[in-house]
Length: 433
Image (cartoon, rainbow, N blue to C red; front, side, top):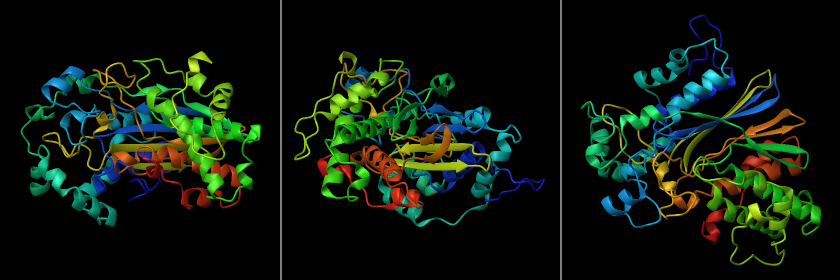
């Protein structure tokens, strides 16, 4: 990938620009994981103002996609819309988020066409196919052949050019009006303090609050003496993993219920992150055994993804994540286009009355979470998520996120990032997630 413009000056050094450059390039080289047919979240640390900013680039469900339509017309009577059903596609918000990332956090020195040129060059001139990309194409062959236009895409190398965009003839209800109505949301990030550090996440409908709650419960357990300081435990020992796993279970039981579109349902974020509430949840911890039948608390009353972290020499940082969710998303290609529609609508709950229940023009529960850590308002760390491959791995990201943050902060060594990111971590799949 070129790093220079026609004037010879480096142009991808600014974090927001570089993030979009990389994301657009992987839209070409790794379409099984990411692309403009997916969604995007961004945290940006402004070194001048010492402030963390957030963008929510997730899309909403189509205006005509109702719970009744899913049950009656599609005959879906399970908990979620299947990944490869065309109606699992919410409005893809990534493309708008790329533009809004540049407009909100860019330097203004380059236009969009210049920023996208490296990706255009890859598309026009070709590129070496990575081992993981080749594996994903092979793994997804049956899915692509069986899905709307998937066979044409695989056989001919492009989507049929018929002038239609949304594959409504295949049972989809998304329209051009749905696309036109989409906007990226500039939102206030949420945070929690852990041992002198401030950990920042995007707010719901993203799942980052789970990592924050996990850390808050862990800190309460240490402060109350229910467990010894994690930095004094052997890493990945039984007592260490028990504390991490149980804290996550307590947090997850709340967030799998409360995390949804905040415009549709009041999410008690402040209460969920309060020290008082997290201390109350920590009281359920038993150091000798796993807690049975954990239930959500009442705070009001008391994947496939790509991620980039880019930091410049002025201390600005962009924590950026873009995903089409499951491998190859819905495996459906809008006609006359060259990208795959994601399947984030599979995260909706098809149960009337649930906060995350499907309804028109609603954002679903989201699993992609960029993170930033500050200390005394100064940038300390920028990091984020990993690939999500199957439905059973939705919550590995939350599990790994809290554990990575805890490991990096509690160890606090010169190789903290390497240790925190590469050491073995517990896998939520072993307890049925």
